[in-house]
Image (cartoon, rainbow, N blue to C red; front, top):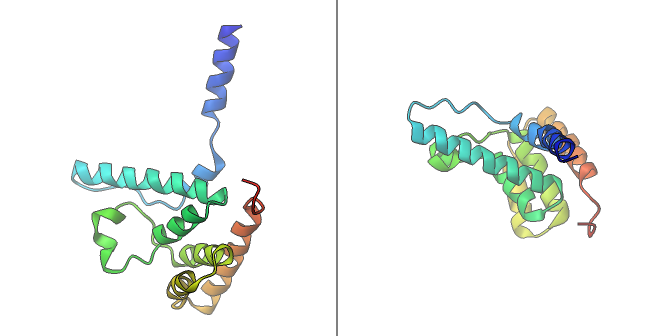
Amino acid sequence: MKLLHAVLLAASAAQPDPIAAEARGFLPVCMFQREFERQLCRDNQQRFVDTYALAMRGDPGAIQTTAHHFGPHGEREMSLDWLGLPTIPVESCAWRRVHLALTANDLTRTLERIACQDLTSADDKAARRRAEQISAGLPPAGSK
């Protein structure tokens, strides 16, 4: 019986997490010459995956952080803080819109405007569709 329990536990642990897999799909490969940069890249990416999972569960702080992770990063893009993180304007705009819908205030409006202002019409439509998709997958407010 213990062996069966161990096998079942190992099998459940081996099941891929679809949210983590989705998050990892946004990430570039950590190909840096120096080991400390590769490690920092991997650490940043793991924090991104963890935060993304929290965001997909409806955590407003994680939603804001996920939007921030997607950019824009500006001059700081080459900073060690951003190694391995994606810069995807459509995702950033979509996540900012989701955050704005949850926490409408002057700051979230400004951040949404900055993230979305340079998108083409097609990218803006894609960001709106993506925001709707994200919002539809979030748990109802107060159900956490």
